[in-house]
Structures are given as C-alpha cells and as structure tokens.
Image (cartoon, rainbow, N blue to C red; front, side):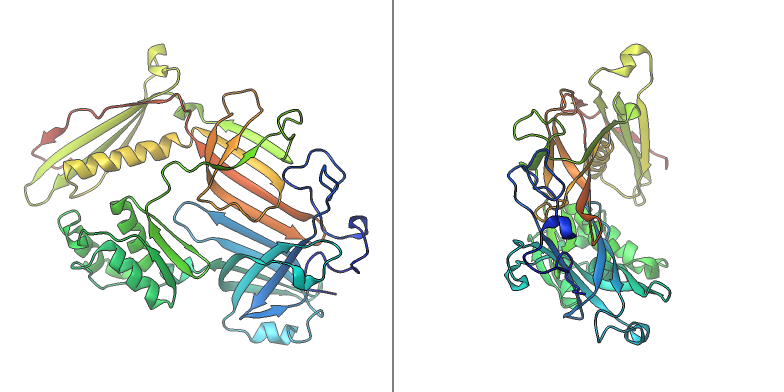
Length: 410
C-alpha cells in the first residue's frame, strides 16, 4: 500500500474505485468527488519523519488557530507498509520531527507531478502503537512548542521587542519575519518587563509568554508558520479570501457542506469594559471605561449592559485605555460566530477573513477566522471545518468615559 493518500490504485481507475476526491469550492451539487464542472480532485497526503517520507499514512488532522496558541496535528500510519517504520522503529524513537504535506494531482498524473503544500511542521509529543489494528498514532504541535517549553530568566530591558523576537527565534534555529520596533522594553509599564522576568515567579515565565506579552504591548500579532516566527502588526482590514454560501441559487452556487450561524445575545446588547490600575510609586489608583452599544440597545428596554472589569497593575492612563479598547473589541467579536464545513482546500490561513453571503440574514458579512481544522482520511476524503467570528457591523462604539483618579489601591 502506498503511503500517499489517494493513490492506492493505478492511474486509470476512477473516483468510484476509492480515490479520495471532493468537490471543488466553486462547484455546485454534483456526485461525491466531482465538481459541477466534472473535475475530480485527487488529494495527496504525505508525512516526512525527520525529513524522510514514510509509507502507510491513512489519516491526518491539522488544527490551525488565531489566538496565540500552538497549532496541533494528529495522524494514523498503518504498520507494515513501510519497511523501515516498523513497530520496533517507533518504539525506539525519543524525538520525531514531522512535516505533513498535502496537494492535489490529476488522476492521470504521476505522484511526482504533485505540488506539495506544507500543512504543519512540528515535533511529535506522543505516539501510540495499536498492536491489534497494526497502526501507530502520532500527536504533536507546531514549532510554537519550542518557545512554550523554554523558560526564561533573562532581562532584555535595553532591547526592543523586535530585537528580542529575533533573538529568541535565532535561539531555536528559526527564521524570523519581524517588523522593527523602537521602544526599549524596559520602558513598558515602568520597567514592568524586568519585574515579570526577574521576580520570584520568573521560573514560570516562558519565551512564548514573553513574546505574547511583547506583542500585546506593541499591538502586534505573533505566530509560527513552518520554521518561521512572525512578529508584526496584524492586517487591519484584509479583504475576504473566500466567500461561502449555502444557497444553491446564489452566484456560483452553494460551496459548503454545512453552515451554522450562531449569535450570543448577551454580547449583542450594550457592553462596558472597565480597567482598574494603580501606580506603586505614587500610590494612586485610576479607572478607564469604554462601552459599545448593540444594534438594538438592550439598555433602552430596561436591561443593564454587560459589564466587564479587568485589574492590571502599573499601567499609565493611556495604556489602560488602550487595554480597555482591546478587550472591548475582543469581547464584541464573539457576538456572531459561523461554523463552516466545506471541501478541503490549502490556501486559507487563520490570519485571513471570510465572508458569508446568500443567507438573506444579518449574518451576511465578513468574519475573522478563529480556527481551521483540516482532516484527510483514506475513507472520508479531504474536508475542512472553519470557525470564524465578528461583531455586527452596525454596532456603535462609545468614546471613552472620563478618567477617574483616586488615591487608594482599587
């Protein structure tokens, strides 16, 4: 058996014989594995173990996210297909670097014609050998795990956030795409960074916690893709990379398998966020408050707005205001959520946006992708699940309230 999913048969056999095939995104209703235009897709999957392809891959799952966490993977490999990857081989491994790759090839094309797209690169965290079913299951995370696993006690007070990101990436032999910053981190929050990395709890501070902390202070995004660390501003208003619809009569027709639209009514009304902080040196405290009105203000109906309070030490008034606005935007983005299942594709990333159209409801708008889950199996083909979120475009954000200053710790 070949370890390349979707090629257990000779090139001349059709999709009905067992080749993994799913409809093209632009296709409408059609037989399984065939798009509306009659084109059969032949997904290919391969796994590289420490740089070497292994035979017998039967199923793979990859989850990519947009919330400062490691991407994850899982795959099942049939034993006996690869003369090297035997049960004894797997049982003896202490470190496995894995890369999952996928691509599409015409049914008549040789495997060498496939253009491979890397889905994920990372170390295997655990493996499980099923002696009865003669398979091995591998699970792991992308290279974000290297930063998560590394504790830091070093102070970088005289360096900028971008310099620190480049240094940490080089420490793991990773490339770095970093937008330069100019503020020495020792100036953040009255040298708050030194307190975080050098106090009695410093052994619990990881490099990833530090990178996320720096990104939040700079208003940046930080993530790992392949073997590269990215530390840069987020794309403020990206155009939708894909428009999905479950309506067969809309535009090019339906291009999803399933579309669920959810709304959190507790977040649809009025929301207020208050940040409380204090300055240890001056022994003074203050609060900053911001709010957002729902499309139909629940406050006008006698309902109190949803109130959220965050307490953070040693912020300046401007920093507290910025933090409050960030938290308000994060909360309101959970108001509308869409969960989409569609034929698998290889172009979208969690930093893209998608649009929903053709539902005839207020859910027809753009959304920020939260997670993308891709699953390729020998039996089930190549499918994808996307979870995306956004607030209603009609929501109104109210200018910040007046700064309230006190002389005691809140």
